Image (cartoon, rainbow, N blue to C red; front, side, top):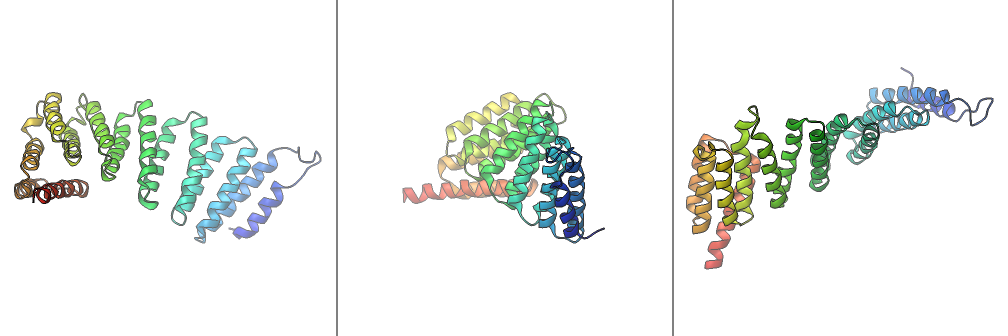
Length: 288
């Protein structure tokens, strides 16, 4: 493959060329320039110069837009997003948003939803920006839902819920956990996960220090799914509520430890449970 910089020069020369009709020459020159920019981008990618690859893909997308090839431009912006992701996450997010704009303008909402989910992951992981991540996941969920892809929508909504709870926005977390639970009631494939959604929502109520609402919610969940009251998650929620009411940190610890022996607690649950434990300690300190 030719040198990336040499290909860039050829692409720029072709993009700025004028034919017999001057600047109003056929758009074929933009198409040809776009192809040359893509060649340059792939050359840079092979040599692991990902920043230059991303820039060349962007130029290619701009040429494709000039020739009114919007679908191709969207795909090329995706290539730019992939190139930038490991070296410049903010630039990666920027060009991915440009691709998303083109997808939605073309009515390609299912594809847009998939990449909006990727944008959420980019904000969450590389950029560590939970606010933008939540908004991206929320949009992805809505777009999947509008396309009748409820399982994919729920996956995005669960990300919103978990991030919201981690950020101590418990009301938003509860709303999303309950939304996913509601949509899972009539689905035999996802019904088994109800106890998980109820448990997480219940923990959020408790972490939000609203024990009355927590007790009401736990009973409401039992009405929604009559099998819930038979689960260990149901019993633990009641035990935690009781321990919080009594300010009994030792009982709280014992019950959580016993639960963990049968069902290993993940990092998210452990984080919320530690916050609840701290709130019990605060109660004791205030009494003293």
